[in-house]
Length: 232
Image (tube, rainbow, N blue to C red; front, top):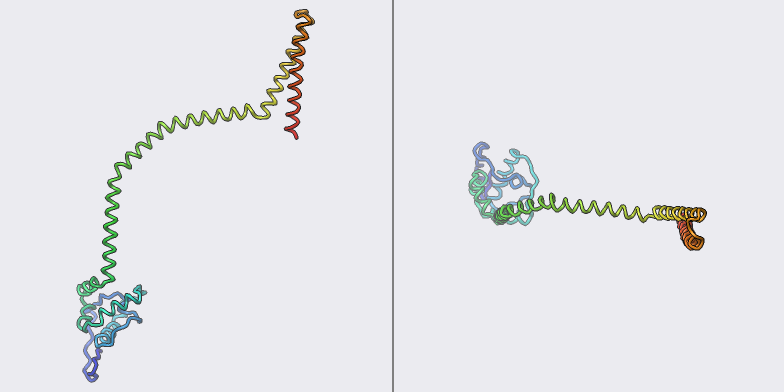
């Protein structure tokens, strides 16, 4: 029932029929208990009419800030009852009013700007596609030619590194020193046999034998010292 100021005895006006006046307001605007109306006849009429429509739509949380709600109320407070009723029943009128709000204009401008920037980035990406394909082909060529050769060279260097580390390892050095000692010992025995067989004179024997034994004992001392150090 619509009540106008100064006319309390006025006959009640009939409610709009449900089938003929569908509200295009969001539920957060129509059914929000916190939404305020200006103290005018239009506010009383719109409040009674909106309370009648709350049962037709499910409740949904409002996402309108107080500042935005105040701005919308400021726009609605000067509208007449017929204008408010038209907004609730006429989809085109509601849509036109919605697009006229500053908040909606800002959102639409942002949307258009984002759409423009997205299209610009898409065009730039499409323009870069030939260059990307070229770089991809170059990478494939490098991977199949230069990279393969570099990998083979790296494997060769790794093999040489392992051989060098193995050759100069303490165990390898001790083994080679032991082999050299055994060889010197064998040469000393052969020289002594030659002396017994008179294949070499005494002066030559003494000179060579002394040199061989000196070498042997020097290697033996090094071998013993290295072996003792490794054990310690």
